Length: 145
Image 1 (tube, helix red, strand yellow):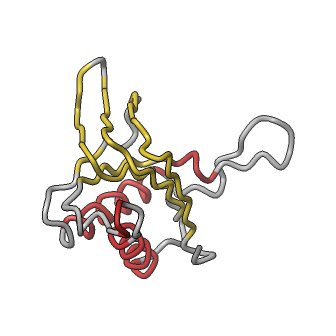
Image 2 (image 1 turned 135 degrees about the vertical axis):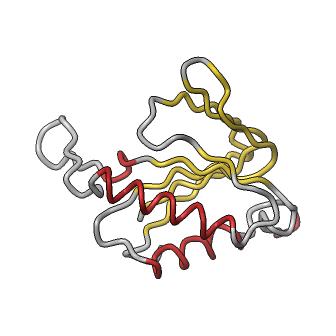
């Protein structure tokens, strides 16, 4: 898994010019899956997301009772080693990735006090966000960083 985590003052997902979901004061997470991701990758990354001390006074999203918006983003596994046209070969196939995304959301929801907001898997989404800080962190479960 690869995840881009952004501390935001607000973020929203728009689909067909309609607001689908939104958050205030929390984290926007763009999540990409590969075929070898498993429950251990999910647990490790969720622990990192929920406990990162990136809010004022070294607090986590759980400490501030913040909100979480998770959006599937297969393009995090783009490869541009050959030429300028990205290859998506390392990203999980859509049917596998959809199951992983749903499982990841379920696992996150089980550890949050607030319901997690999401995008729609496979939809053409317009994402709005105001990055706070700005703070943007990339994690990769295979490298544990």
